[in-house]
Length: 317
Image (cartoon, rainbow, N blue to C red):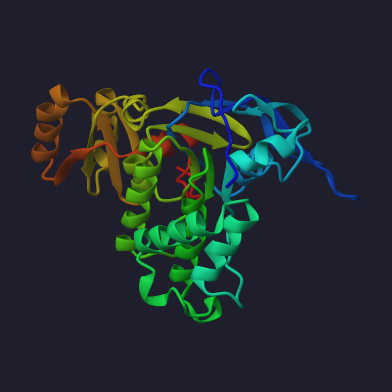
């Protein structure tokens, strides 16, 4: 079985000013990454948030030795990703965006073949296959050809393949896309177990509830730049309050309420980001005007909206 010795002192991943420009003949060059820097400590679960085209997948492809950067430096457990990719590859495993298992293999065969290709001995590989299939709830379809599986089942096979490696660093690009809520939570639990065992995880996701529940820190990326980094709680606090007051048909109250916090419009409803001590005054204004208002906690979606200027699915504020 392939064994990798890791230094206890180095970071799992360290990226400094990573840039990537795509050049296509006859077209304007596209800057996918414009100086991305980040650090992953061993055993962390980190989410990389951003809209389609923000640069998330490009960063993961560079980090996993699949793409060369235009400039910058990137190390995985102290090994230079650019100069020594052969040293990095045994340390990582990847779930690519829209990746699919081989259609002519069963899930059991897919995972086993991948582990054997990585140098895992037969008996340990068989044990890891059974464990991963169980974690992903795939026992009932373990010996069916992958071509016969549903989209969500195929995605679970891809995640199971990577989970089975127990690699020190896992890259997961939209790992739960197409899964039902129960399957998503099975993936979350498996990833939590892996980090407890020492693995480090960098994932991208469009599910903000997934990012908030699963990750210990977040990086928000837009137009190839990191806009903010921190815990979900810290990022939510940066929007200017911990509570959101939603006022239906509240445009007529915008001027009166503007001094109480940040206002975001959504159709005819305005959402006011504010602090607990201002709630009574805000509700009094709404009641006096005969307009209904509801109070709830600020979500990561509101924070993303204020930081980026549009939702994670692309709508502008």
